[in-house]
Length: 114
Length: 113
Image (cartoon, rainbow over all chains, first blue to last red):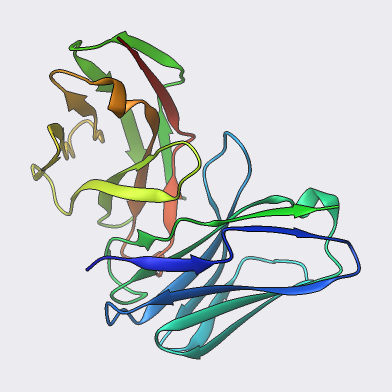
């Protein structure tokens, strides 16, 4: 099973709302990732968790707050977002965060900020 | 630093035509190379991979060979179907990149009946 699940599939939020995106995998992977993808562009890395610890933060604004409660779950907490944050948010996982293991992606959450 | 360059799209083909998408890379370490496919409205799916020079990755009729001498990883399929219409991303992960994937810009492929 190479499935990464993400909820919700779609999310519309106002600029003053607080919401969370959720990601789950049961492949025993110890690295998990958040990406942001704008239309017709490749995914841009936001955060990397390795063994439940944040190992990479690609200078993401503080209105995005990641959390890794355990090795299977990854959350992205959203607060005071801007319209330009509207995008597809993708979660991925890999066996570890080192080496050259392939990443498996979830279906994404389509976020619209109004 | 690492980079991936792939051919611009869209690439428009008729069903049963031969598909080639060019991908070249620069890397400082010993990268693994990947092709991902993204169907409309979906996430990325791993299509194939190669972890060392001369490896050939293959899946669903697609193939790509890791060519270190030309720093290339071109994707090919002998006979495309309408269902192959998607965006294809070439990517690399380097030994010193802590799992970070470096993506190419993506190539949209449109297959017409």
